[in-house]
Image (cartoon, rainbow, N blue to C red; front, side):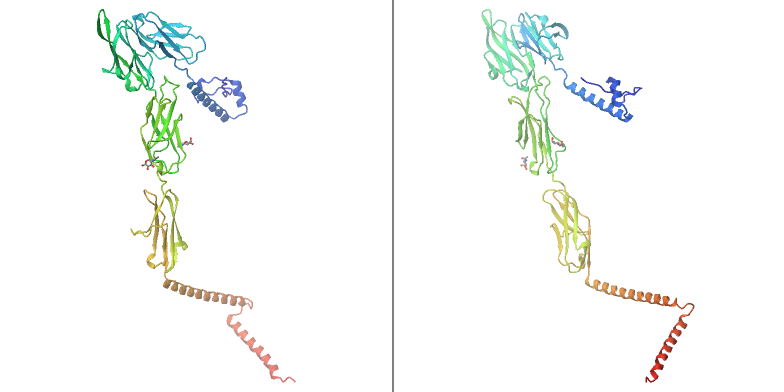
Length: 494
Ligand SMILES: *[C@@H]1O[C@H](CO)[C@@H](O)[C@H](O)[C@H]1NC(C)=O
Ligand SMILES: *[C@@H]1O[C@H](CO)[C@@H](O)[C@H](O)[C@H]1NC(C)=O
C-alpha cells in the first residue's frame, strides 16, 4: 500500500511542487512534523513528491501490454463461404475473461472466451478487426478480405517481422484444380527460388522481401485449361529492430589510460517485446566482445594500440537477423605534456666562470616518449635535445635566460625562464678588494665610535671640568706621582 505523507500545518500551505495529485493525510503529517521546523517540513514535502514521481515512472513502465490478434487459418484472404477463427491473446490469460471485438472500429460484441469465429464468410465481413481483453490495450488490427474470385493468393494476416517465416498460398476455388502454379514478386517470377508443392516459403524474411506479390495458375475450365492470375497484394516485412548505432561515452578521442565505454543502441519493435537481442562489439573488424545480451561494452583503460574503427552488430539468437552499425573511428590520444619545470645547479643560476652548470627539465603530466629541447631566450638555436643540458666550463658568453621545451607529439610545452649569471674571475677579485676596503672603513668607524664613547663616559665623572683642564690635571697628577716616587728614590735607604 502506498501511504502518502504530507506535512499539514493548521492552515494548509500552497503546494509548490506540483503536488495537486497528493492526497493529504493530516494525522501522519502532523506526526512527522511535530516539533520540526518549517524548513524541515518543506524537505519532507520535496522528498514525498520526488518519491511519487518515481512511483509514477515505475507504474508507467508497467503499463498494460498490447493484445495480440491472430487468425486461424493465418491468412488475410479467404474464399466466400469459408470460416476463420480470430484469437485475442492478452498478457494475462487466467481462465475466462471477456474480450471486446471491433469491426471497422465499431464494437462487434463481447465474448467470454478470447476467440471470435466467422463462419460462412460473406462480403460484409470484409474489413479491419481488432480486439481488447481485460488487462491489455487494444490489439493490432487485422484486415480480412473475403474473395469471390476463382484464384486467390493467400498472404499472412499477421505482421511478418524480419527473420520470421513468410508463407503464401495460391489457391483455386475448387480444390485440386490447379496446375503450373507460379509466384511473382514485383512482376518477377520467384517460383524457383522459394516455392514448394503448394506454397511459397521464405524461411528468414528480410525487409527487402517486402513488395507486391501475386500468383498465376492453369485452371480447369469446363474441358479446357485456362491460365488465371490472382489479385496483387502488397506484403510488408516489418523491422524487428532498427539498425544499431555505436556511441562512445565522453569522446571519440579519449586519452591514453582512460576508460572507454561503448554502447550499441537499437530500437526493438513494440510488437515483439520479448525478442532477445545479442550484441557483438568489433574493433578493426575483429570481435572484441560478444555475443552478449548486454548492449554496453566497457574497456577499463585504453592504449594507443586501441585506436581503430569500431562497430557493433545486433542479431537475433538464431542469427536470422543481423545488423551492423556504421563504423566509428576512435583515436586514442596521448595525455598532452604539461607542468614543465626547470632545475638548475648551482642554485639560483649563479656560477663562477670555468665551473660546471647543469640544467634539468622535468614534466609533471604527459604519457609516451617525451622529447626535449633546450633554448636560450632570443636565439633560435637548439642547444640540446636531452633531458638535461650541461655546460662543463661556463664562459661570460653563457650569461642569459634559458628554458626547455617538452613534447610527446603535438604542440610542445615550455618551461619558465631561468637566469644564468656567470661570475668572472677578475670581477670576483675586484669584489673581494672592495669588500676588504669596506671592512677596513667599517673597522675605523667602529673604533672612532668606541673612542668617543669611552671619552664621554670619563668626562662625566669630574663634572664641569673642561677636557683641556682635565688633561692638564691628569698630567700634573702624573708629574706629582712621579715626584713622590722620585723623592724616596733620591733618599738613601740606610
Ligand atoms: C563507464 O562505465 C563505468 C562502469 O559502468 C562507469 O563507472 C563510468 O562512469 C562510465 N564512464 C563514462 C564516461 O560514462
Ligand atoms: C586497428 O588498425 C590500426 C592500423 O592498422 C592499428 O594501428 C590499430 O592498433 C588497430 N586497432 C585495434 C583495436 O586493433
